[in-house]
Length: 115
Length: 112
Image 1 (cartoon, rainbow over the protein chains, first blue to last red):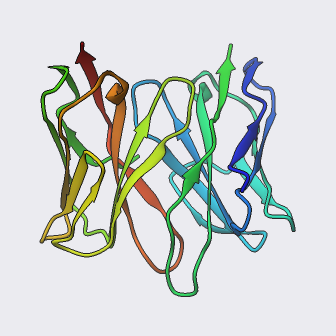
Image 2: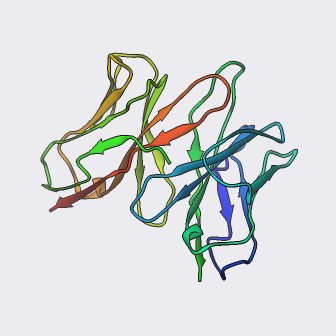
């Protein structure tokens, strides 16, 4: 069984640029969630994708967007980067049951630095 | 964004001591989760709790889902150096989407 993988591991961008982060979900999982973890904080929920559609969203502006592909892998896109976007971005996959949920398993994260 | 109230925020303990940390929320959750995160890695699930009052163990770890569904605690018995890391509590709602709300974390340092 393959775990959740993310790429790249580290990334440096400048203010105003755009970034795409990638996630491959764990084998058998159909749901992907993205989180932002600032230094010294717990992860903050950005959004979740299920069946290639956004299934829920946290308190993040529209310049944070995502995609889920038929193989359940996912991308997180951030436009017009700001300094405060510097953080560890975590992807978590799970298997969504009808009417309920299941535990989320996290990838190692992508460390994004915005200069 | 919302974060759960987790305490203590950091602890230094001697190897062999027991550790206790807890988490409270103003909202009710259907599932409580405890994760451990080590440097350079994502959080790893330690224990999941699904029912109010439930007490669950995983080796030296024991966690309980509070009766009010607004709190949970985690105990680690006989700590060892590899217990070092940041422990996060998290609450999950059911139905709709699986939003998980995390605490701020408890940083645990074990002195050999």
